[in-house]
Amino acid sequence: MNRLRRTLGVLRDNWRDPSFWLEGPDFVWRHVLTAPLRRAGWAYQRRTGDAEATTIGDADWDNCIVLDACRYDTFESVADPSWDLRPRLAAGSDTGQYLAANYPPSVTESDLVYVNSNPRVANEPTGDFHEIRHVWQDEWNDEYDTVMPEDVCAAAREAATDHPDKRLLVHLVQPHIPYIGPTADDLPSGAAIQSMRSGDAEMDDSKPYAAVKAGLVEPETVRAAYRESLELAMEHVEALVDDLEGKTVVTADHGDLLGERDGRWVGEFSQWGHPANTPATPLVRVPLAVPPFDERKTVRDGTATDTNQTDPNSEQLEALGYR
Image 1 (cartoon, rainbow, N blue to C red):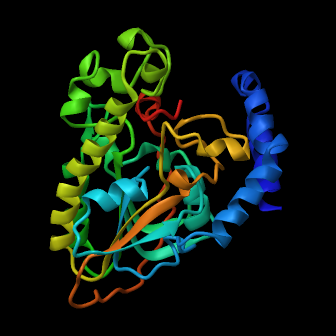
Image 2 (cartoon, rainbow, N blue to C red):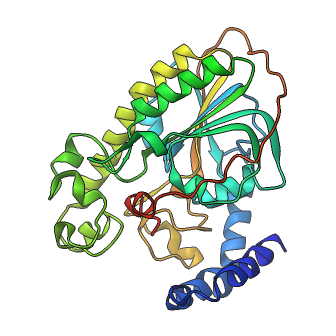
């Protein structure tokens, strides 16, 4: 019933937009024709496997660091081995579903400060927080078309200092596109290929995976750029974990497809990225890591405000592949 309401809501909000109807066949396929397959896929994921079906909102933490589009297998290969790591079943396969499951408009989190570097969050309806700091507004990196991990971690330290008695939710962009690191720098047209705006690297697609389809980049190169982005982010995440008081968890909003065809059995033929409502294992099996900690933080309720009313720049959304 909730999925039906969301589908009707999408129709209600977009039926006047001509571009919406240009995408109509995809919408009907994803939300109507294959909906039973996708529901069965989610049920299968919940009943099988070793991933714990725990939402970020229900997990026990003082500080939560969210890596965007981070796969469990890649995280496991780069994470600090001293951390207590287990797989978690994500509530969705994209950021919109993550927000809807954890922080919908009906939720009030008066003890939570959200430090966010993904402009997509500002484009979605959310609950109310004690404060939300949109780092992308002031720290957008024009070279890479993203927010660098060191900048969002610096903002997190500042928020922790300003609000020592509040829980902290820190949302990094990495390893989501655009990638960062030496492999990304060596791609055709340098980091510009990450955005793939019209005219960049002979591409017209907003997602860098189009370069693979066009034969400009080998699939393994994209996978290497993804891994390097996570490795670079983890350097700053590990330093931030050491600086924060209380119990910190590190997780992801969803995973990512890197050439796998796991989505075909639920009617999803994309092999790259993170299409919505696709219960494929690389998309929904994400890490939940707990680094060692000493004492818990003393958390107190504060005043919740209507905080997430910021319109993101369309080019910033485009750079992350959302338009």
